[in-house]
Amino acid sequence: MLEAIGCIVRRDLLLALRRRSDAATALLFFVIVASLFPLGVGAEPNLLRSIAPGVIWVAALLSSMLSLARLFAADHADGTLEQILLGAAPLGAVAAAKTFAHWLISGFPMVLIAPLLALQYDLAPSLYGVLALSLLLGTPVLSLIGAIGAALTLGLRGGGVLLSLLVLPLYVPVLIMGAGSVEMASAGLGGQGLLLLLGALLVAAAALAPWGIAAALRISTE
Amino acid sequence: MLEAASIDCERGGRVLFRGLSFGLRPGELLRIAGANGQGKTSLLRILCGLLTPAAGEVRWDGERISSLREEYSRRLVYIGHAPGVKDELSAAENLSITCTLAGMPAPASSIAQALERFGIPAATFLKRLSQGQRRRAALARLALSESIPLWLLDEPLAALDAAAASLMESLISGQVARGGMVVYTTHQETHVGGRILDLDARHA
Image 1 (cartoon, rainbow over the protein chains, first blue to last red):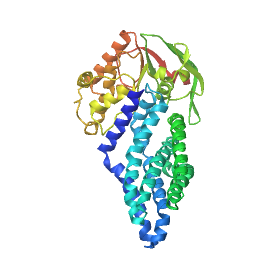
Image 2 (tube, rainbow over the protein chains, first blue to last red):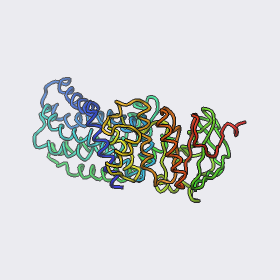
Image 3 (spheres, each protein chain N blue to C red):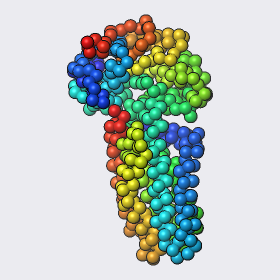
Image 4 (cartoon, chains in turn red, brown):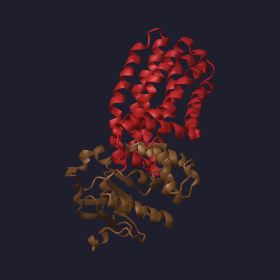
């Protein structure tokens, strides 16, 4: 089973490396959306400081949506998904591996680049750590929940829009806790409480979502 | 042994076949015949567990395949319509990944050997190959699947040239001679033969 998990992660990373534009698009989208707000709302430092966590988190949410549509679509089109479904390892484990690879490609770069984007909002340097940590805990949850939606909408016409309608409402708790933890930390209340909740959400999603993804894949490939 | 017990298949509200039953013992070869749209591919997908039949069940050694899941998929190779290979990977990478996922990782030397038998250069990226060559790169997996009892092949001879087709035929005969089972569909003339399950006749 571990062999299959390692194989899937390596395969998806290799594919992303050979097709860099896909991963780069989602990351650039994140950077651009987060950079448009300071230009749009003006250079009022207090306003920017207060909207920073929310805006960066919403941008991360949208960027994660953007890359999700492709999570299973390419494998579905060339028939490799069928071979994955007929693999020797439990489908849940393989689904978890695919989602982890997706997060490494699309979520993790956002964690790294978010503090840089926070500069544009004049966010206090002491909050960079909380922002990055909230994204580190939150973006895998986005990938896990989103992967269920991506598996369900596989092969549907207009699946991308349907995927957003299906998944974005489910992202709300992650958004509230993620952005909230940074806001609480900036108000001096300490963001640990919400970060811990976010961590708990991650553990729950990591335990349950893979089986949901597996079931959804079986339904949509019939 | 593989058993299909009165399976029904419906696709998009249309009944493709009803009450289909047959058994396949080790060393048997079954050819599914029928015109386009009669449900040959659907039947193969039901047999490998990708598709749930509308009624009835498929059993492997007396147990339902839906409860065996991976236990069953480990015992079969399914080659479908789509070649199941990645354009961005080389032929060797593709084959090595497919084998690892199927639970029988193969050393680089035997992968190179299998590809050579099918005349595919191991280091070439699949996007540089023609449709027929891609198909061969996918079928090369069969050369490494001799220990797997059940082969389900959807149009294995399609898009192949004469040399590759005769290699495929010898692989299929070899599998049957070893006591393996093969279920396949084809529209090509072939010498492999085997028992015929005609889906057209069931409709008439």
